[in-house]
Image (cartoon, rainbow, N blue to C red):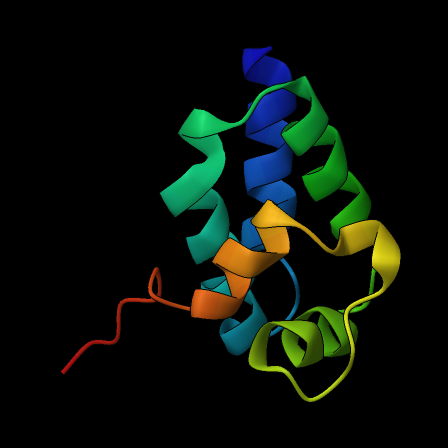
Length: 86
């Protein structure tokens, strides 16, 4: 199981842009400890999507596809997990 989480963390934090890394990686860091197998699989599927789409779903500029609607995306859309340096 640790190998799965390690791989998800890497993929979440190495998206290609700093903004996507912060949003997707920050979400992983804030929530992964409470995930079961279903949530880990859903997050793994989410990571196959483009950063532009994931970020648009998170900020509400695009409708969330039905396959990602639910508690995980609800938590993602709060964006309260992003820490902004001052």
